[in-house]
Image (cartoon, rainbow, N blue to C red):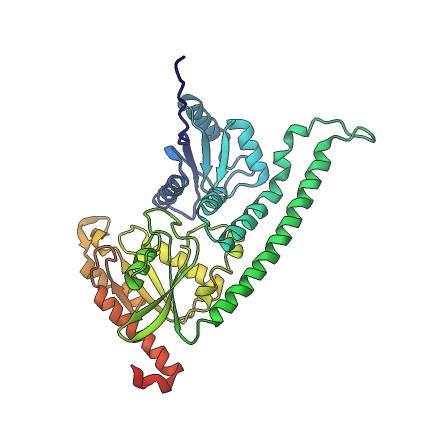
Length: 394
C-alpha cells in the first residue's frame, strides 16, 4: 500500500491593507503609514497583496470606510481569495462586526496586529504577562461580537438563551484574570526593583528609539553580547541589561522595546513596568534611522512616548544610525537636483537641535570610536558629579 505524505507547513496568510486619508495628513504620509503596516503584517507572517485608501473627513462610524470602498474591497477579496483585511487604525466593536458581516473574512485592526506580534515575541514571564493583560483588555469590550451567533435565542422567563449569561460569565472570568495578571505584574515589578537596587552604584544608560532603528545592533556592538537583532519590527520585546566598560569606566546598558506610532494606549500602560529602565536611566541614547525617509516623524513619536513615560527631560545622546544606507534627499520639490548630502545634514538645524549628536553605522562599525568617546565623556561627567571621591580612578 502506497504511503501518504501530508504537507504540514503553515500556509502564509494573504492580506489586504486599508487606510483612511484624513485632512490632517497627506497622501504621502498615508502611504508611509500603510508601508509600516505592511512591515507589521510581514513581521506577523502575512503577505500583503493590495492596499486600499480613501479620502474622508473622518472614518465612517459604522464601517470605517464608505460602502462603495467596502464593495471594492469585497470584490478584490472574492476574486483573489484573500484571507484577511487589516485596518491601519483601531476599530470599534460595532465597526468590527459590521465589516466582518460584509466581507466574510478575518478582520484585524492595527492594535490587534501589534498585540499578535507582541504575543509571538514575548519570552520572559514579565513580557508574557504584560501581553496577556493587554490582549484581555482589548478583548473585553468585544465579547458581544463573539456571541452574535446566539442573538436569535428566545428571551423571556424560562426561555432565556445562553448567549447573555455566557457573555456575563466570560466577562467575569476575564475581569478576574485581568485582576490576577495585574497582581502578578506588581510582584514582578517588586522583584525587578530589588534587582535594580542590587546592581550597585553603576551609572545606567538606556537605548531608546523607534522600532527597527538598530538599537539591538548597537547593544551588541557596545557590550560584545549576542542580543537578538533582526530586520523586523519589535525584534526586541524583553528589556536586556548588560554591563559595559569603556576604558576603565563601567556602566549598565539596557536595550528596550522599540516605540511606534499609533501604539495602543493600553499596551503602553501594560509595558510601563518594562520601561522602568528608561525612567530610571541616567542617560538615554536616542537611536534614529537616518536613512528612513520619515525619521523626523519617528523622532517626534519617540519624544511623545518619552513624555508619556515621564522621561523626556533626561540627558540624551542622539545617535543617527545607518549612515551607510543614507541617500541624499531633495531639499526643494521644485528643484530636485538640489539634494541634502549627509555632510549637509550634519550641519542642519535637525542635527544641532538634537545635540549632542553622533553619526554612525553600527552595522559597518563606522564612527564607533567617536561614539564610544562621547558616551564615555557623558557617563564620566555624571559619575564624577555623583561620586566625587572616585575621581582618582578615572
